[in-house]
Amino acid sequence: MNVRTQHDAVRQIVRLPHPGGETDHSVQGELTAWYVEVGDTVAVGQRLFQISWPGLVIDYTADAAGQVVQRHGRLREHVAAEAELLELRLNASESAERN
Image (cartoon, rainbow, N blue to C red):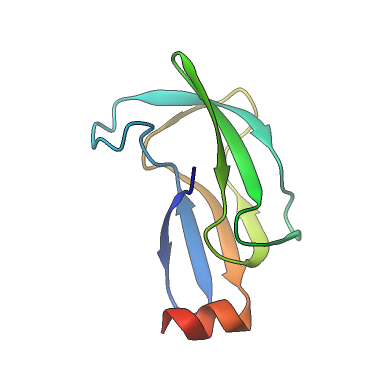
């Protein structure tokens, strides 16, 4: 599942979408895996992290290529829908395409 993102010319904030696409921010999932580290370069479609929701486990993937500059959250931590989990520095080609 692709993540929700907010971006400007050079960075992208990766936010955790609600598993059902709803807007209820009170729902929380558990961060059960990180697939990337700070400094890693990621490609479109690459797995970023895994969240276990009640009755559902989802691997979230990148919708843009870039370098991981910050991770938010620790393993086994509960995170709410729309929480910021990752920040990417976009590759030059990704940045140009989005402007």
